[in-house]
Amino acid sequence: MFDVDVARADQRLLDAASLVVDEILAVTDIDPASILLVGATCRDVLHSALGHEFDARATDDIDIGVALDDWRAITQIHEKFKSVVTKRNGIRYRIAGAINVDVMPFGGIEDPSGLSQPPARGEDLIVFGFADVLSHAMPLPLPGGRTIRIPRPAGYAALKLRSWIDRSRVGEYKDAEDLALVAYWYQESQEIRDELWDPERGLDRLAGEFGLDDRLGAIAFLRRDLMAQLSRAAQNELADLMAPLEAQDFADRLVLPPLAPARFDARERRAYAAILSSLRADLRS
Image (cartoon, rainbow, N blue to C red; front, side):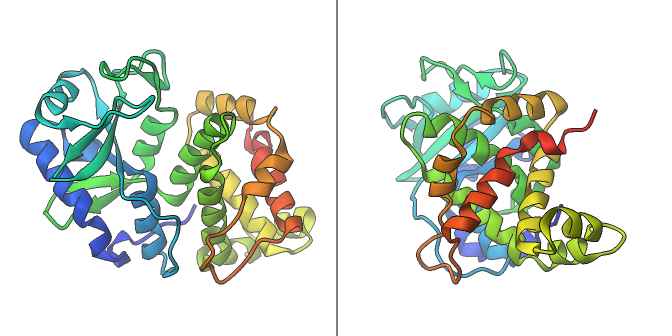
C-alpha cells in the first residue's frame, strides 16, 4: 500500500471544500476528523498529489462522508442549508454560496452496517466501506485551517468499486473510469514498482503470476490494497457482489481520461478487469 503526500496537491483544489467544511462546522459540533472527503474532489487531490497534471472527468459537486453517532448534526445541516432536490438524492445541500454538497452520514447511525437512512432521503443510502476507509484515511489540512480526512488511493478504489457494482446495474458507468485512473496511479508509482521487483517482497509473485509484467502486477497490488482497506465482513460482501457481474462489461468501461498520456488497449482492459474482479484471491482464512 503506497502513501500519498497530500501536501503536494494543488491547494486550489481544496478551496471549495475548505469553505464548505468551515460553514458546516459553524452550525454543528462535528469533529473535523470524522469528515471524509470522497468523490471527484478526493480523486483530483490524490491525482495532483501523485504528480499527475492531466485532467480527469470534471464535476462541480463536493461529496463528503460524515461519521456520526446520532442524527443531530444532519438535522442542523438540513435546517441551516438549502436542500437541492434531485431524483433519489435527499442528501444534497447548497453550502458556501452556490456549492452543491452531498453529505453522506455513516458510522454509528448505520442500520444495518453499510446503510444509513437520512430523513430527507426517504430511502436507504449505501455507505458501504466508509467507516473502514476512514480508519485508514490520511489527514488532509485545508486552506482554512481545519484538518479532515482523505482516503488512500486503495480506499478511494474500494468505495468506487462498490459504486460501480450498484450504478452499473442501472446504466451508470462513470465509476469504472475512476477505477481505471487508480490503476494508472498504481502502474506509475515508483513505490509499487520497487515492491514488485524486490526479491523479498514481490518478485516471486511478479514472475510466477504475471510473467514479469509489472503493469499487471500493479493491478494485482491495487486489488490487494483495496481489500486490505476493508473489514473481513466487508471483503466478503464486496466479493459476493462482484462475482456475478459481467467482466467484459467492466473491461469495456476501464477507460482513461482523454488527456492521459497512456491508453489501455482492449487486451489490457480485459486483463485488468479480470484481476480486479477476482477479489477472493486476496482473502485468506
